[in-house]
Amino acid sequence: MEKKAVLRKIAVWFMVFAIAVTAVFSMPVQAATTQECTVKGKYYQTDARSMLKKINKFRTGKEAWYYNEDGSKKTLSGLGKLTYDYELEKIAMQRAAEISVLFSHTRPNGELCFSLFPDSYNSMGENIAMGTSFIMGVDDTLEMWKETNEGYAGQGHRRNMLSEGFTCIGIACFEVEGNKYWVQEFGNPNSGAKKTKACNKTKTKKIKCVKQ
Image (tube, rainbow, N blue to C red; front, side):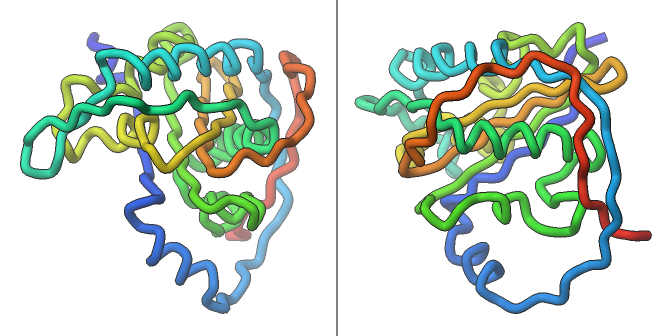
């Protein structure tokens, strides 16, 4: 069975929809009624952090290209390396637990994923992925997100990783019942949050979910 047959993936490129999403954030909305849910899983943050070096090699090497809407190839040069942001990692860890409950850029409480971001970020992006643990290691997950053989419509993850608008990243990996959930959170500028020790432990996370 091909890997693509057992993987589900989704990407949002926030920079493209900055005006629309900002407008949504600024509009008053009726809060959904929520209840507390719990999910137990194991974090692999040493593995998650190791992806940064590979992403920067991708950004600064010959693979730094993507397709334009018209099918032409845009080659990028001079892309800066992403710095690791421990505030974004905190967000990514929360989102990794949340997507194990609801695999979507909408959070289980009904809010957009970007509701977790502090106001200090000028640009934001998120990549998520999930699949059975034995095929969701660092290299396989990154290769899936590269979307080398996809056309423009299928390269949202790739454009996020190669975006000139992002300067920092936080990454998380969370395993629940034989599946791994990966999250990349992108931003600009770096929050400057203090470095933390990588979490490689089993945790029970409390998550607010829309009450059915």
